[in-house]
Structure formats: structure tokens, C-alpha cells
Length: 598
Ligand code: ADP
Image 1 (tube, rainbow, N blue to C red):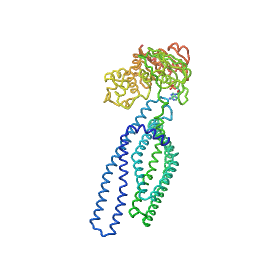
Image 2 (cartoon, helix red, strand yellow):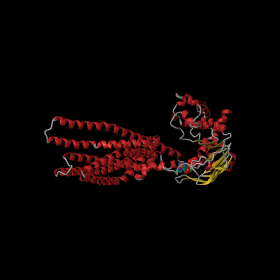
Image 3 (cartoon, rainbow, N blue to C red):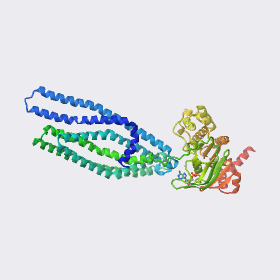
Image 4 (cartoon, protein in one colour):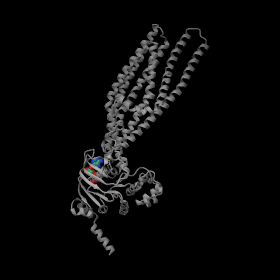
């Protein structure tokens, strides 16, 4: 991204604050004019005092000059204080508003992306977070640099140059000639730093992801005593960052030295030239003009010495804005949606010749054909990695198949309005379903306008009510403090509250104890009427109780039918059931139960 691209992308965010921009610019102009006052006063004062010295002056005359100097300088300072305050305040206000709008638009954008975006490794949480944070802060800094720092400085510099030229053409020329030299040095510096900056951005993203990984996996790290290994992994990155920073600083200091030298040469040239002109009594050149020109030159050169910092910031912004606007302008990742919103969904799904691979190339489903009827419980069975969750992901429109069609009530799933479709689907996963917040808030997520009574009802149906009431803060307790099994029932309560016609349960009882599993099984049985229920489970009792089974292996549907039929076929389903029965030690359990009843 170049500077024009950057401003083109930023301008829609600055536009709403046009009035703030105009106020800031007017104040900028006023303060730039004020900044010239010192040089003018000094010029006039030196000449006036000089003129007095050659005469028989009275102290009254001297006091008059000093009073005028004091009043003008102090008056200017009073006005300038107010103007600078306004300039900073309105400029900062704009930066804060722009920064808020940038953050909010990128959040809205990310929320609109399809699942495939999030499953790419390049978009891991920590990396996206760093990209957004650094993007927002460096872009809003650019806005601030431009309106609060750069513009006033350059306006003052321009005015000072005009004054220099007005006083003496040759002195103005010397002042002007230093400017391109400065720009050239700054440009070279920026070019040398560019590659390192880009490298730094990727280091920063990796650092943020690294810290996130440590926090997320702290249990595993500690239980395996792998602190040293994890620390070493980060150390490598820290060293790369340090190396990069040192190289960057070295180049920056070198160029800072060169620029300071050029500035001194400029100042010396101005002093020599103005002194020479005074000595040859060039028209209009007085002793006061020596100081006047040196001060004006200082004003001309000061924005350019600051230019490097602003240039650095803008260069940072160019690099970080790239990542940021890549997210904001990325329209091909927006979740697709049709417009079809039938009055009622019956809930019959058909998958026809479906092939699907994940964005990273993992082939998950091959030539899948299956029909899921309403009013019955359909179980998807298979070993881990067989493709069961993928089927649910496709039915929920989280991903689209590469080939084949999926129909819901005879209509292509792609034609459905995505939000409408998901309003009609309840999804319970085995993890990642609790948000930061209270139990009540977490259940209410299923129906934002639910009453407390409805929430209590849902909690009762999912057999978590009694346990909630035993907590000190009851429904106001933090949901993340609950155990895995309790959280699972919160998620089920949320689904009961949503009360959708289609329900997908992906190992809903995986982390529940036997009693809770039985209770949940009863509630699910109770709600299956008039609904489509798909259950993915390794739980033998849930599988056996379902009405229709699809057994998947390596992404293909191998067998289907009701539990008895499919078992008799003697394929993968039979293997899974037999192995489950053996692992449960069903023979022995049966004997124990028998002996206790006889
Ligand atoms: P199951 O639910 O039967 O355990 P999945 O449907 O989760 O199996 O996975 C099927 C295949 O797809 C596996 O090989 C798995 O590694 C792969 N897979 C699942 N989710 C993703 C993903 N988000 N990105 C890439 N590959 C995935």
C-alpha cells in the first residue's frame, strides 16, 4: 500500500468528522501565523534598540520599546495557548472517533466472514488480533500526525520561507535549498528501513499468537513441565525482534546524525550570508535581520526534523494498514446468503453426491448421499475424523461443498437466507460454547428477549436448575466457573430456550456423568417430536435409541438403516457397537444387575 492508497482508505473514516477537520485546519493556520511573531518581534526589537544606542535616548523611550515587546510576546502566548489547546483537543477528538469507527467496522467485518476464514492458520486469533490492534493504532496515529503535527508544522515552515524570501531573496534561497536535501535523506532512510518494518509486523503477530498459545495451553505446559521449552520458543522470536530493533535504531541514529549536520551547515550558511549582507550594507539588511533569518530558518527546518518521526509512523501505518485494510476490504470472505425464507421449515435434509475439502486441503467428505427426516432422531456414527462434524458444518451452511447439492425441504441450501436458516437450527457442540458472562446471560443467548421464567424453565429441562440454585449467586454466577459437564447443560438449556425445529447435537453428553447423560437423553427424546434431530455420539445408548443411523468412514457413508438392520450387516457400525460394549464391560454389568435383582 502506498501513501495515496492509505489516504484513500482512511478518507471514508475521516469524512464524517469534516467539521472537526475544518476547525483544526483554521486553528492550524492561526497558530502558524502566531509562530512567526517571535522572529518578527526580535527583528524589529534588535533594530529599534540598535537605533536608540546611536542616539541620546531617554529611558522613557527604552521602556516604551520593552513594553511593546512584552505586550506583543505575552499577548501572542495567551492567544497561542488557547489556539494550541483547541488544535490538540479537536485533532485528538477526531483521532479518537476515527479509531473507534475503524475498530467497530473491522469487528463488523470479521463477524460477517465465513468459517473458512477462521480456519486458515494465517488468521489465527492472536494474529488477527495483533493485525487489528496495530492497524487501528497506527492508522489513527497517522490521522493525528497529519492534522495535529504535520499540517501545522508545514504551514509554519511555508510561512517562514515566504517571510525569508520577502526579507531577502538570497537568504530565502539558502533556506529553501536545504529542504530537498533533507527530504532526500529522509526518503533514503525510509527505504532502508522498509523491509525490516515488514519483518517486524510479522514478528509482532507471531509474538501475540505465541502468548495466546501459552495461556490457552497452560495446563498441558505445566503438567508436562515444558516451561523451559516454551520459553525457548519465545526467546528465539524475542532475539529476532531485538536484532531487528537494533538494526533499525542503528540506521535511524546514523541518519539523524547526518540530518543534524545538514541543519547546522544551513544555519552557518545563513549566518555567514546575512552577516555579509549587513556588512556590505545591502538594502534592507540590518543586524536584526541576522537573528530574524536564523529564527525563521529554525522554523523552516523544524518540521523537517520532525518529518522522520512522522515518516516512521506513516511507514508503520503503511505496513500495518495493509494487514488491517486487507481484513476490512476483504469481500470474498463474506458469508454468502440467499433470500429464501419459507414460512415454516419442515426439516428434511438431503445431501446428494457431496464432496468437501476444508480450505487447507483436508478432504473430509467424498460422494456423500444421505437423507435426514424430521420427527426422528438420526445418528451419525463413525470413528474420530470420519467426517461426522463436517456433515453438520455443511448442513449449518458453515461451509459450502465443492460439488454436489444439499437440499432442505427440497430447496437448495444456498438459496436460504443464512441468518434465517440458523435461526431455525439449534447447535450444541462439545466445547467452546460458554461466553464470558453470567449463567443467565449465557442461557439467554438462545433467545435475547426471554423472561427469567423462560430461562428457569430451560434450565430445568436441561437438569441444571438445582445445581444453579446451590451456587451463592445462583443465575448471576459466572458461567465460566462451572464444570465442563455443567457448561454443557447450559448450552443445552440455551438450545431448549431457542426451541428451533432443527437440532444438531455434536457429542452433547461427552463430558457429562452417567446420571446427567441419562437425564439429558430423556429431555432430548422429549423434544424430538416435530423436529429434525441429528446426533453425533460415541455413547452406545444414544446411538441404539436413534431411529436412523448413518455410519461414516473416511468421509464416506458406508452403511445406513435402523440400529438393528445396520448391525446385522456386520460392517463398521457393528465393529463400533461391539467395541463399545466390550469397553463398557456390558457382560459383567448385566451379571451385576441380574444378581442384584434376583
Ligand atoms: P468427526 O466429526 O467424524 O470426528 P470431522 O468431520 O471433524 O470428523 O473431520 C473430518 C476430517 O476433516 C478430519 O480429517 C479432520 O482432520 C478434518 N477437519 C475437520 N475440521 C477441519 C478444519 N477446520 N480444517 C481442516 N480440516 C478439518
